[in-house]
Length: 286
Image (tube, rainbow, N blue to C red; front, side, top):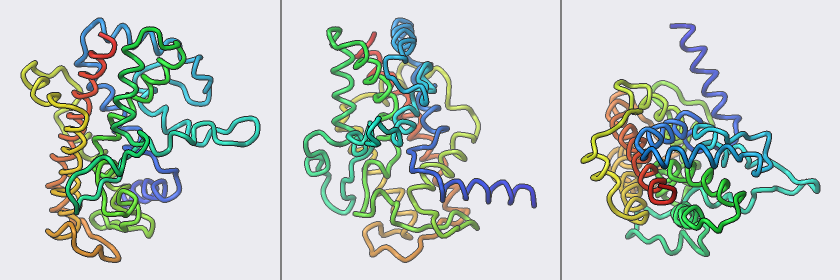
């Protein structure tokens, strides 16, 4: 038990010190693996051929040669600088999320001004990939962004919030653990996601056609609304003791019973992300 506590403490220290990364590596890689297991064979071949051109990205520090590597590429490149010390990918920071207020009617317009939000960029990346006249480097970049952004959209706190930076400003305890910098966002990004994905059976498998069709139905806007609703109905409601729009306390508390109820929801979000990504990849590359 002591060894487990030490390991968990080290994990939480990483949460407090590492740059914000949506879904950590485990969540994004799992979404990508689910997608790869459910795309058409021709799409799978096209993905591998494009990612084989990863050198065109000119980011050797951040490989994207496999779909798993590509799934975290957009987070890896955030700190990269050019020769003048300027951020190379600063323009894409706002593309990872959309802060749609859960306590107001769903409306993407304010959150997606000038296309600077995750759902708008997902649609843009699909268009770039479908257009075979798009320069090869831009298509490889669009593929890496697309794989990552669909994962982002299915982390509920990238789709809805309470003017608290997607829960980053909402301090929270995860069961008995509550280091000062732990917050609702990092719990859903990492601790809860990792427990959910690690809970058997494995989420990475070929799903029945009827289930793929049902889950991947609708538009990116529909999926945005779906994730926003999870943020309202589950993420904030569970952390706020039933009233998601009540004033946020100084510190939220997710007890063990609450966490156990959240695991199936978090698993479902990862599965939906993977199957919806598969549909977009088939549409763009198949």
